[in-house]
Image (cartoon, rainbow over all chains, first blue to last red; front, side):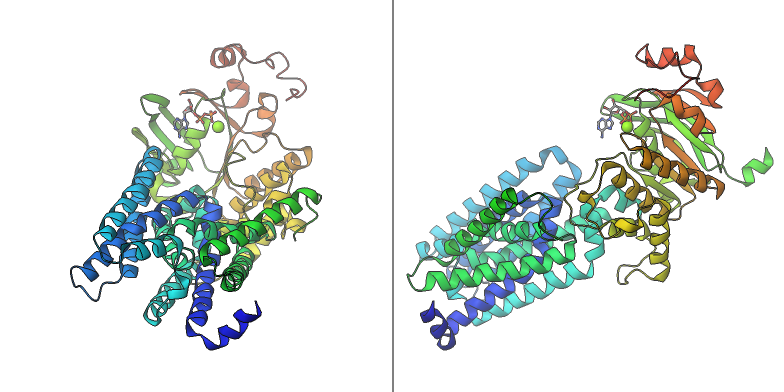
Length: 284
Length: 256
Ligand SMILES: Nc1ncnc2c1ncn2[C@@H]1O[C@H](COP(=O)(O)OP(=O)(O)O)[C@@H](O)[C@H]1O
Ligand SMILES: [Mg+2]
């Protein structure tokens, strides 16, 4: 822990990692709250995994096709938005097919990713870092890209705060009041997609869902309004990503997995405390 | 007759037919509700009462027929109708306060880039006062009793300030205090000239609460003054003898 704090002051890659965690936390706080109350965690899961297809294709084009400008992060964003729109349109048009489509995108996206990555030199390290996170290898360029994503996600999430609250709470009534419910649902899915890309930089595609939902679920317990839940889960998420970095640094553990375990432990503790305490004795 | 055409009826339903899949929920229903009336909708479970309300709101697309609100086609008249859904349709763990739920009635008046203004806040406070929920305005909605939750949804509809109010079983499973509060609100809304359409399951109180009754089971069986609609023969045809309260309809309230 002490070594981590000393090295943090010296090493740029640690500062970048901490900053990436902070960026992820803001997006997680704002969008994670909507994902939780709208109960679309499994949709976020489908999107997160299908992102591998875009990353693999982009990596392949970059290394084999000499498209130098195309980075896996670009591919991730494109794939995330594409699968968000596909899932969104299907769930609006044909409700009963929704989970089939999510499952298909989930698996097909990963298969496409694995195939393209296997045709690219450096196969193993790339695949592992996409799946399980590479927060210690974030470059300056990537960091700026994440800042851009974060600004878009948070600005949209806050600008349309009232609309998202209404659509998530009672879509039927929101429609009655003249809100474009379908539009805001699709927009929310797209913002969720971008958020999973940011979070994937921290803990990898496979564990995105945990980082999106655990801080938010803990925050929900202590919040009577969505705004408060956002602030709290933002703080918690930053706590978890920073603790994950610090704890894993000394013994050289995988950062993503460590972060998720810490968040999971906190969530379990919260549940136990909630069970033991009298109902209604905690919270506002 | 001519005067009626100038002052449009509050709700005009013409040959309305709605089906889900191949199953018709409403068949050829035509009703004209004049402005300022309090109308009860009665009928057995699955009769299509909620479907009628949703068709009037424009939530479900009719296979056939038309709905007009104050002369305007239902799908263009959304701002003119307020709605209190059947209880239990929302997630009670949702982190939102009583006041915030009531404020949703004002959306549509508030552009997205603005916060609620003074008038919006005033309307919300008035609505909460009317349903006697002012003291709970900062509570999370899950921490209320069922009756109190129902009153919050009433407040949301009232805050809208619409001339036509549709309520789907507002009295189902509520406590006496809530029933009183809701009746109070209905009374005041009526005196303010608003039109009320209320799905109601208790035949024993139907005559007392409403000016007119709609008796429905897929088709419209009767629409008129309670004493005409609450006709034992008609009721036993519609309810197929599944009703115990025929005998004491005129007497004390049924035990439910
Ligand atoms: N969204 C829906 N999808 C399929 N069937 C429905 C739907 N809503 C209602 N129904 C069917 O339509 C009929 C009327 O339902 P409803 O209007 O809810 O009756 P009520 O409110 O009088 O109890 C029922 O048979 C019900 O099963
Ligand atoms: Mg019903």
